[in-house]
Length: 226
Image (cartoon, rainbow, N blue to C red; front, side, top):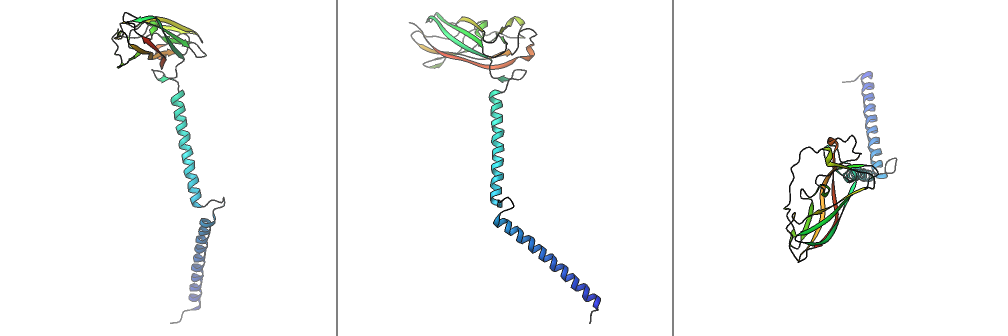
């Protein structure tokens, strides 16, 4: 069978189209191959770019970890009792000659912030030893608290005291009934307790705005006489 001139021309046109398509595909493949071998327009091959992307992800994760750590260390306490950096510091000193009948410690709480602080006296020696607030350690380990345990409700205004910047409040307290001391023994004593406060003057105080901070004093050594 003989094909007409029109049919021959159509077949030739289709062949040319397929040939051009194959050539374009080959050229695209060749460009991809050269890019993989020689690098892209910025001079980075795929392996280098993958390493750069991984490094960028690691840097982002590291920055996120740093932000979380900084917030954990410096984050202020939120309303309702969150824990944060304390605006007050505690110092204790031994008073007199300790014995099983007389163990006295002087407690000082100082405002180290640049603003007034209103402190709840509960759970601090400022109100007396009404709960376990000292860590007392002897040769056999920590001593168990055996003193008073006050029941608490909503704190009245009289339970708070204000400290101006740099101001302190001091009180000496007896610990002989709070812990089972033994004669001719030495102990390490430290105040350690969460305190509640408001970073503002006592005027207009709202107990619902109380914040909480962990306060630890210096450690002193107490030697009980025979």
